[in-house]
Length: 207
Image 1 (cartoon, helix red, strand yellow):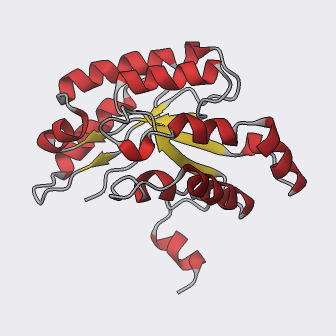
Image 2: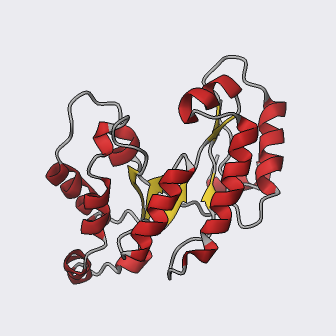
């Protein structure tokens, strides 16, 4: 079976996808030992030099609860620096073509991202997360889904008004449930809610 046969079977399947890397953010976050900042910087640089153009760099939540991200601002500042942009340019890479994402689960983290953008070192995209299962969502975010929708709306409104160039004016949501009682209907309902927010992009649910 060729790739053309897949398109006949699944006519809505996209012919082009965007691949991103989440190693430094998701891959390192639960490690007991802190990965040194120079090591993270080296990893991020090599990802970009290898051709990766979409990278989750860090989490802008409170580092007291997530010590692996205590160096969030330092990582972003390095990748946004003129010095690194010059090094990348020598390899034929325009850093304006690279999207740097930071996780911002709660509003305080979004505010932090906006402030960093004002200083010229903020992420290009912020990523909020919502779970299809309420208990998992509360454990992950510390708030209920109804409260989270209100918070997400406030965050979405803050992004276009941040006054920065090249910032993506949308907040992304990831729907995920880690329990066996995963309900497709609930996932669909959450996506309908997300689709109702102007300027909002979101990812598909996964079991």
